[in-house]
Length: 192
Image (tube, rainbow, N blue to C red; front, side):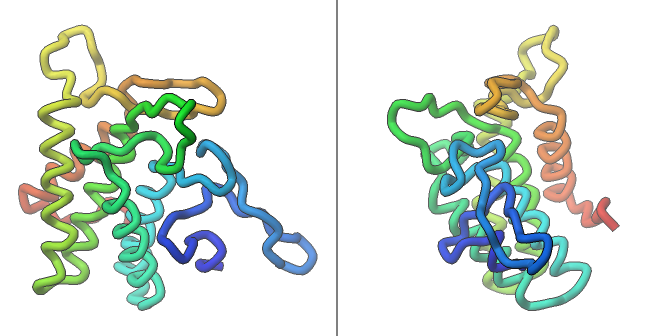
């Protein structure tokens, strides 16, 4: 099943449909991404984080290999400020809103992955995670707006349905705080 969700290049499908009788793969579905073959950034971030957790709990090498592949895809497709657009494969006519929640989730997942791989390989994931969290803090933080309830701005929840675009998202705030906590040495995994 893993190979049906994670493409060879490390991008992921949001939704995969299987034949209920045979279990055969039928299609990948776009869901909250732009299109079935696009690369929704928050789905990619959640895959990176979730596959790292799956490896943490199971120690199955396939999960670690997939987490690394997804991490490399995510990092290779980031803009200069390291906070992704809501989908990595957008046609030019579509507005490239940022999704700070995808950046926060990926940063936290990268920190977990860096702990899991250890050694010299660890910095391949830790260093960009630190830079992502710093960019979220410096460029996306709502620290100067007393009326804003969210911590980080410019999240995109569901562009295809026109919902919650360019706003703070509570799950973005969660992963941002979790990432900062991990940087401060808290290695507790809340998803036990």
